[in-house]
Amino acid sequence: MIPNYKSEGRGESNYWNWNGFKIFWNVKGKENTRPMILLHGFGASSKHWRRNSYFFAKKGYSVYSIDLIGFGNSAQPGLKEIEKLDNGVWCNQVSDFIKQVIRPKTSNKIILIGNSLGSLVALTCAVYLENEISCVIASPLPDPLVIRKKESTLNSIFEKFKTKLIKIFFRIFPLEIVLFLINKLGIIKLGLNSAYFKKDHLDKELINIVRKPVLRKTAARSLRAMCIGMSTRGVKLQASYLLEQLSHSKKVPFLLLWGEKDNFIPLFLGKKIANFHRWVELKIISNSGHCVHDEDPSLFNKISYEWIRDLKTH
Image (cartoon, rainbow, N blue to C red; front, top):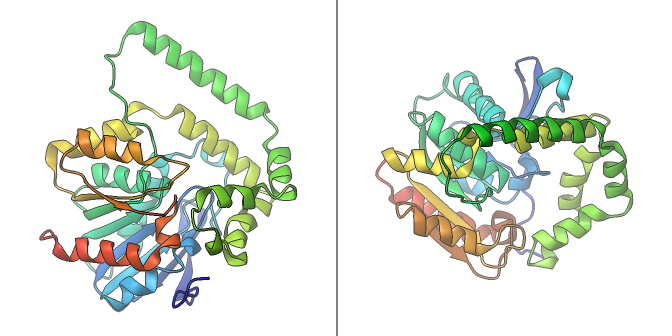
């Protein structure tokens, strides 16, 4: 078990109406004026920052954590309601959250900290909301780093065909049955067991954080919108393009925090990003897996805080 790092209190929880969808969010240290948004990974929620948010609040930050649409306690729309769910949609959600919830309180730039999918959303925001973002900490960053090839007519035709095929596949694929089996066969626990290097950090609270949204009746339709959205998104929403765009301006400092024992997104990918984009800083956390912020919260918090503190951009 983790001494001195029991799950934190709730803070102030709210629901926000975003384009007709109910979005859950939480804030700790709301009296502070330096805003920070914590973005969870795939299958998780704002509650996954259970061992981090109070630390930053005590350091003087106003710490917001939101359930991205489709996850946690937020709405789980399907294809009819939203058409698709991808990092572009989640970036728009963050953008409006900043405008409608944070901006009435402070004009200071936003610090973004993400885990996995949340890191990709943070990177997307750093590019498309660059004037709003102070810095980004990505732990780790999904999406393979690829060298983009020149667009050709043949490639364009193939991409359109592939997109149609993906849409047809996920429309008929029985995700409802898959989610039912995932829950009944204990696959969630197996997945977390693979994600976490430190097995004693897998507690009932963590399993419930991931399990409860899966049990909702709307989970399968939302997962379908995610599968289609993430599988068919254009180049401008892929990590390689986004990092390339960010490298042109270097306006947003970028830190990669990577677990040495990450089984989901191996460390060599982090090293590849840092080697290709020399302005990106990489810090490796030894004996930690895919969720460093929850496996090694004291170390994650310390490294993140000191890196932010030493920046001269906010």
